[in-house]
Image 1 (cartoon, rainbow, N blue to C red):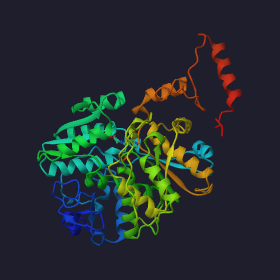
Image 2: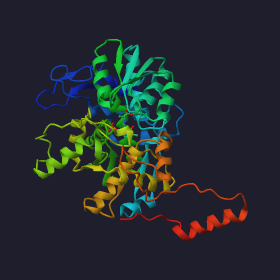
Image 3: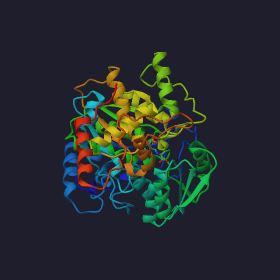
Image 4: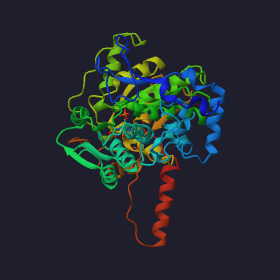
Length: 468
Ligand code: F0G
């Protein structure tokens, strides 16, 4: 099918309320973030029948990998048949996506799996997964003629929005909890020219504030409550399947904070299934940090009470009033997109779990030993996989993909504290890292250095082993 035949993609898409009893639809040029009728979450619905033949699409997407068209150089716009934009819109892009899928043998061994793959979304232009969704949100903001783009953030959304706003020449304001965002993330936002507004309060307070701000007609809200963020983010599912040569993994595991990412992955897999490019869904699991885990708590309650997995009965979430975790990216007590995320998890047969601070920290270090650096929130995935293998929810020979969401350089302070034995949450005593690897002071001569190298070889045998 030619691009011309599907030029008017926007005519085939609506914003639809996901609450079944409401199901209202709105035009895609309406600047709304929740259903004006019932307050429910919105999602973009494209007429997939109009996207063309699945095999033709698959070939077209593969061919684009070698193209120099700016849209094809983006790992998001490459899949434009499934995006609610006309093909000729001016896109705001930093050539996001195209992130690597790595084998992680040491992490696999740590988890008790025969093999494990990690999809490293931290290799995006601003160092986190947010860029895939931000390119579509800021393109939409520019199309609507917004003056100012705004978000609440634990740091990564802010850095990403600041960068894309700068590309688009839009004013940007980010609202962040003071003292709770890593310096690397703040540095990015300042450098990209955003107004950095620090509030007394936590992320959930910031989120409430920006929703109030979004009533103002000149403001465009770029948090993942905005369904145009989810549209770009869902392409990660397409790229992942393409990298797996369309062989579906049994499990996909993502960290959970505000729940936009897991909602988007679920939507992406669902669309591929509707198109016939896959014949079932991978089990989608979401892992939270124990001190900030309202959805994991809710899932445990649902399991205990044997609530049906078809999503027909969804109890309300109980927010965590004072969320705590050293994985600051996911220090969120009241996730805005929990309904979409939980619906996706349940539909796929997945689970929602929580991992402790120690489990997250050791998991982060073992990923490092595979030569792959991620930020703490991303390591919840490896911690969660290990727990699911131990509990018998994941088989040793099954295929598993962990979604890493942020780059190691987003939070080097955490890494240094882990290896130096000073990492602790609040007043608790410092953790003893299973893979702590502190620097050693050595005499400035050859024999002392050789002796140190020799000693280390004897001690570890090269491969670190976790204590069970
Ligand atoms: N991992 C990282 C590195 C993140 O920055 C976030 C969220 C998540 C995981 C969780 O993803 O919210 O879609 O469930 N960061 C947001 C921010 C909240 O403001 O940067 P989620």
